Image 1 (cartoon, rainbow, N blue to C red):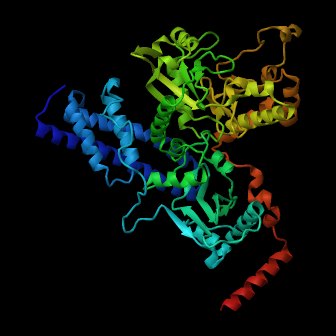
Image 2: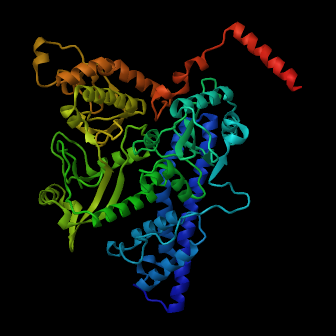
Image 3: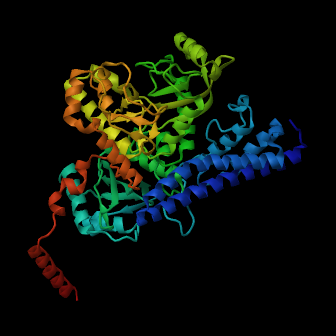
Length: 612
């Protein structure tokens, strides 16, 4: 390493810190610009561009980190900077963050850049932010023209209907609403159905975050209701009607609904946040059980989510004593999967080689996981956290697990002191494997699992994903009872698959052969053959044919592929369709007959006369 005079090292430290912060600021400007562009795409119903925008934003962070690393290497020969200068760099960086509005995210960016430059032995010392250095409490955007984090509304002043209408119109969407008065009435009915008749307290108010949340084909108003001791979520999805106008689709008033809306199986929101920590704190008031890291990830700040998750893991390890063990269930051919029983996640390491009939490589498996990261997951694909060089205490690893790692993935591990360092692994939320759920469940649970399994595969189909290996062991049941796919080494885009019906046998003995009597290409799909490995259990077969008899019909798969090739973007409802206003209050959406329309016109004319 190069050594610099003290004064020079301080100046270099400041310059490097300034360069790194400029790199982060560039990233965050792009992050906010993506949210502004999402609003334009939503209003224009340009769903393809919205999907592309979400994909590009995910890749943007790593692009900015690489740019910053190159700049530091070119300007300062960063790899040769000595320890004293790195200490100066961090101190100057902290000073630059004292008035910053995204200090926690800027610290994570600093770590990302450092870890590209420094050797792993420096990762846990004073050169990076192992713990946050800047408090994020009570940060606000104090620019004169800036909007606050959230707006407060007081229904006791103007009435609930007028307040709800103003909440919606304050977002100033240019597309007109089909019938905002009707939708507001539905919101009030849903509130009455959920809470009953509630006596307004002196503190009765509704808070809404100042920016809309965009995902898939919806824009969400996200807020909370406060009345006395009541604090409840208030989330309203806005969608386009068939004729291109806007409508409030429903209102979500329960925390369990929000936990699904912000779950790890849905894609990240696009939302413009000047102070992301304030948004996270707001959301935690209505989802108190949700970890901060998971909320940051849902908001599109997945690197910050990764950082907080890793801190949570280290904290948990220091306050627990159980061992990492192999995860229960059928062993996979591609991954070694293990868990810490007291921690609700699983850890996945790619094996060095795969037995037949698997025909894939490590690089291809990693590409599949990247595909899922960028894809619209529609609530049916588990998000993964990807890490490099993770050090785990050897004393906390079960001996059988260590032997499995040494035998099946020796290139992925190394020993360093008292730690086993895993060079590359994925971490996912732990779920109950569907095959275990079906094996041990009651009739009611089996029926629910099979209905959810069929719905999950059909949702994936509509999202242009063919799972490949559709065995039940590759699907999991979440704590909310939803079935989610989590084994990605064989997934393909449905539009790149060839959906075929099984040809008629030429000879009678063909059907008795262990080999197919017809040619099979590498991406050929034969839905009729899925019966063989999905319907072996009597209970499973009964419920499968009851709820998803069309599953084995090639026409179902071919129809979805045709729609995708025609450019159709599927609808996604991260809540039960039964709570949509059109389903919950159908009488409000019934078309008027001629007499009703005439009466409505007369009422409108009379109202206009009175107003004049």
